Image (tube, rainbow, N blue to C red; front, side, top):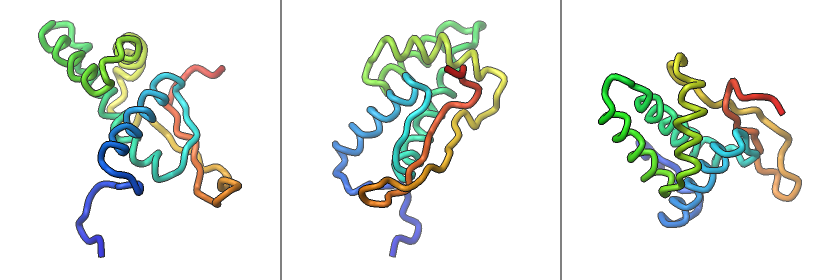
Amino acid sequence: MRHRVSGKKLGRDSGQRKALALNLTLALLKHERIKTTRAKAEFVRGKAERLITIAKRGLAHDDPARAVHARRIAASRLNNDRDMVGKLFDELAPRYADRPGGYTRMYKLEPRKGDRAEMVLLELVDREQA
């Protein structure tokens, strides 16, 4: 029984889980939409939303030390990827400055052909349509 057990293991050990979370988060922030399984989308959704909230903290113009601290936290969670940190703070944080949360949405798709896994489209809300 899994009573009161939090978190998802996704059938992986901790190193693989950490790598998967980083790669999916980077892909979501870079492309602003990803197609993945429902379990993986639920796993990575909170991490991406937390990063955007941290970036919004960095928009505070009254205290530059707070902005630097927010950038360092985001950089450490994005494996020090300068391009993604720049996009997070320069594009995404200003876009969601007035939004109190809920930066992602999930659309159900048809099951994957090979194993009938539940597939979803995880995307950032208010993104520019291509």
